[in-house]
Length: 378
Image (tube, rainbow, N blue to C red):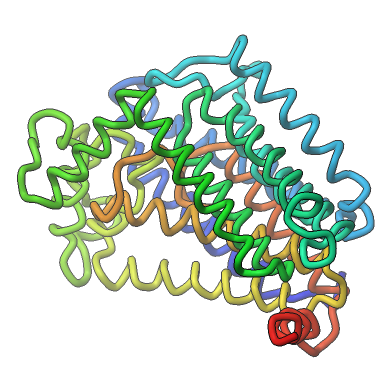
């Protein structure tokens, strides 16, 4: 425990602290108007943060590679069972069935599934490396299982999370040493799945159309483009130093989901370019330390777990910022550690704990990175 990379814990805690401040700032007015208590969302987030810190400590203390390797297939089976349950009897909100009610709290099984998928893929690729077992026996089976998990997530429907799950799997295949010619299969499969989802889910196609309208300058700010337009107003009005913490205007019921999916926009409005740059630097440092852990692992399983978890957090952060700034179609993905939410925060803090635990077992040399490129040169 004492040999781990403490920067990982520090950076995760900094982001979580920023999240607490911004959740209160972005949600207090909405909470007062809709629930009569300006501290409602802050109180919920504080409770989740306390629970998350317990999860972080437990993961850093006990979830080493040996435990994770044994638990990987069971964790994925449990996550898939929860995905089935949420489809059958989950709570619906904003047209999607993604939550299970657990008393006063709710659970989003997708968040458990995405970390379980990383563990399972690392477990499989460690036992049956693609470079040794070929396409049919090494690559196709884990891709089929990954497709099953993504299909259950799509059923909610949740295209963005399913797409990022495939993207994470692609990076893990690359890190495992899979021949580059084999990686065309997951790319083609992912593109086909996205196209099918757009055709069968009209609301997803409308979001893509809204994005296309924004790119071509034909965004209808009174209809489908309202949320994106309000987000851009918030970001643009922040300027260099922002309006000041708590002084934002778009959170006053102008920007929907201000404390969840679009919390980055409120942060940009209140803290400006300087604040958003500082936030992105902290996120970037966390991702660097995470990939540094992966590069220094002395065993493939730990390397793939660390790399997969780090890449997954990075993809979620990239997607959230891209949506808020109009670079990508609107999705329901949170900003890791910062956005309001329970399941995502717990999973991300657990990932940070696992990264710390793995880093404590590493040496000082980048063993796996040299092995990866040496295989490419053979």
